[in-house]
Amino acid sequence: MKFVSYNDCGKENVGILIEDSVVPINEIVCLTNGIRINSMIDLIENMNEDLIEILENVVSAANYNFVPVNSIKLLAPIPYPQRNVLCLGKNYEEHAKEIEATKISDTGIPDHPIYFTKTASPAIADGDSIRFSYEAARQVDYEVELAVVIGKEGVNIKPEDAEDYIFGYTIINDVTARDVQVKHKQWFKAKSMDDFCPMGPVIVYKKEIPFPVELNIQSRINGELRQNSNTKKLIFNISYIISDLSLGFTLKPGDIICTGTPSGVGIGFKPPKFLEDGDIIECYIEKIGKLVNKVVVI
Image (tube, one colour):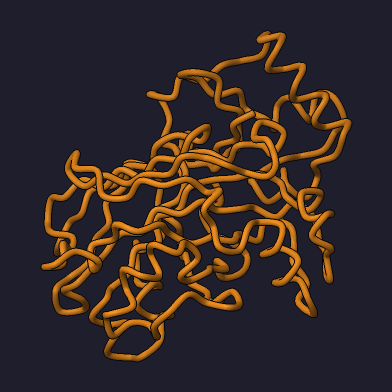
């Protein structure tokens, strides 16, 4: 199942995407068990085997009200994450190598995961514009990433139990101002500017993607292929990340973990290929879809 958040007549709703239509979830769930699902976080927190069965029956029966996608505005799946997005740096070997000569990182392949966070207030949706001014940043870069959405609370999680704590997967473009990254000698502000967290267009429920996750991942700028890899090349895989991150740190429903970006980012080229006004960024991950945004310099 592919879950979406959307705006319908000024109200946020959650639904199941079926081809070019959306089935509103709140209507289904209220009719069957009285639970109200008003946001993606509500869905994640209430997800259980009974609810899964209800939703799977909806997908197969196709006897509920369908809303055409072109009649609504899709939002980021979790427009306002309850906590900062949790991120990993340098988690593909070739990406670690391509940036080792820059001023944004130390050299070499990490021995342990490099964690940082970025804000999303809100995360922007597929089709929205990434807006920034040259007064704030001039060297803005793209990073396609597989994002893992946590489904239930857990701490000190064993690697073999990691999948039990996953709700699903989405795409995030970890947009980054490289000059700000260098200036401040850390990554938070450079990755947390307004519109720097495109997310979506869907969250794919974990049952749809075999574990361990091995998905093709790509980005294109104006049609030019820049990043092209597979998540099986992660230095620290998803089981390791969830286990390591949860040591002494409680993961909660709706937490989002960005697993890192492969090589081919703008700063890795000689000369660098930073984003410019009017650029179209396409972030693609197999089985999830395509996240497309336009750059607007204001």
